[in-house]
Image (tube, rainbow, N blue to C red; front, side):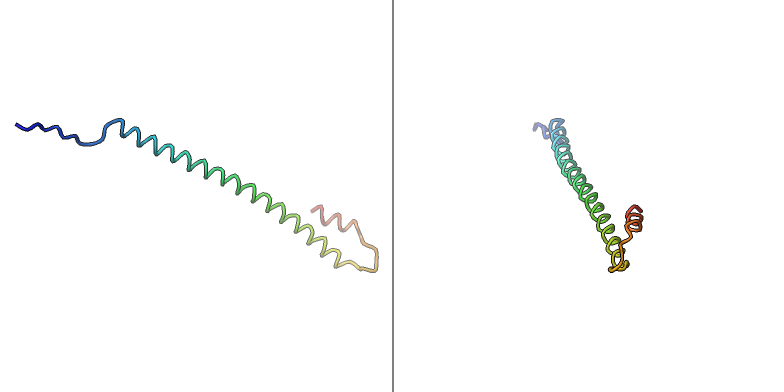
Length: 84
């Protein structure tokens, strides 16, 4: 008689090893994603600050262009405009 010792399926050790490898890959991918997300947030905040500064400069420039160059500059109007 022939023995029927063919194994089917995976052993518990093989399944655990596959789960550990997948978990490690997921951890590395999550760490990379999280770091890039923080970098993007920092860059976005810097961009927003730069835009606000440029808007303030544009308002000041417009105000200077509207004033009479030969006359005296009204600094109160400029201060009010920039404080808004």
